Length: 479
Ligand code: AMP
Image (cartoon, rainbow, N blue to C red; front, side, top):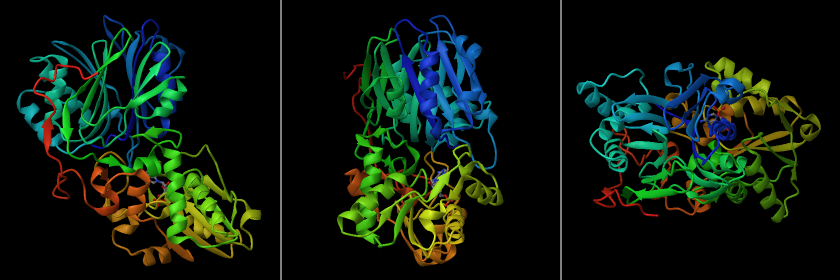
């Protein structure tokens, strides 16, 4: 099951971790709106509060003050199309023979079924159909036979797929990133402790400093006294498989992921969009908020080329309407677009318009918007998209849509242009993505735009990596 989420872990010397965890979860709210949870440890026992809903609704004064302990982890969970999953709210916690475990997971395992079956045959009883419980059981079992680092090493060699995890073993907080670094995870320093989080914006919120990305295949163990951390590079792969879509859509623009400020990447992509398919119109406008950075880069490059294109806001967003994907039916999704965006007539009326967004998934947003802009008096509507056509599903942690639902899975750009009713439509090239991220395509996961996955998914793709443990003795810390 896809776990499209935000994770955090904090160790402090002498104050409760619950409040900073709560603030960090607020900073990661965009990564998941279905449920929120925190697990802390006070040196004697684990405390847990997990609720459905947004971070602000899931906690109150009394639930936060009951979360004792200066070490803890937290999680926000993304909604899946078709309904809520109360079973899978996280962190997942268990107590077992050699202690307590809490787990927060962002990503998606591709062999969870096999591992689950094997563990079930050994007598493990599962309470949910989530991947996270599979990881927790495998780790709990390994911890009966090995120390923490060796146990994690064994689990990393057993599970395949994407995972950024924050884990709590008794009062020790750990961060683990899968060997290909598909989902982001960063390490930061606070005035009085250390933090692991999906995105650096969470560290900023706590007035901390980003130290670096957790490396692919790395385990980071925070000292429970909040005094430092140890790093173990447990699995090394020839190639990484960083998700490019984090940079295009999912992550906050103010986050730094794999050494790149997301906002700068989006602006660079916008500039390249102009270079590849720019068209001079009276006005260029973003679809708020997802198209904003792309549109500003596009308009800047257009201006440098002498195009007399004004950059303006032509659509106002109702910020109280959630992401349209929360709507389970197509009808509701269409209504949501109209609820969410309203045109500013003076920007649009009697003018040729370029409208920019990051991506087209099902085509709902662009179809609705082209009609909306025409109703508002646009002379012509040109659509520019800051990513290549999304033609295949994501199996690695982003809730995209099924192949049948993806408008680009069986249509050409010209057909999509006609479907959405635009005067012209252009997407960005895959090369623009690899150039902006300064990485080879073999070091990125581009599965949703190429159909070729860096993981072996039901025969969809080839696992291009050779797994090799970095060291035979994983117990020695790297730094
Ligand atoms: P659609 O309306 O189905 O074509 O979806 C495209 C819109 O949804 C764009 O405005 C994107 O910013 C946004 N979007 C792209 N990917 C996702 C996702 N995985 N979850 C929610 N929204 C998304």
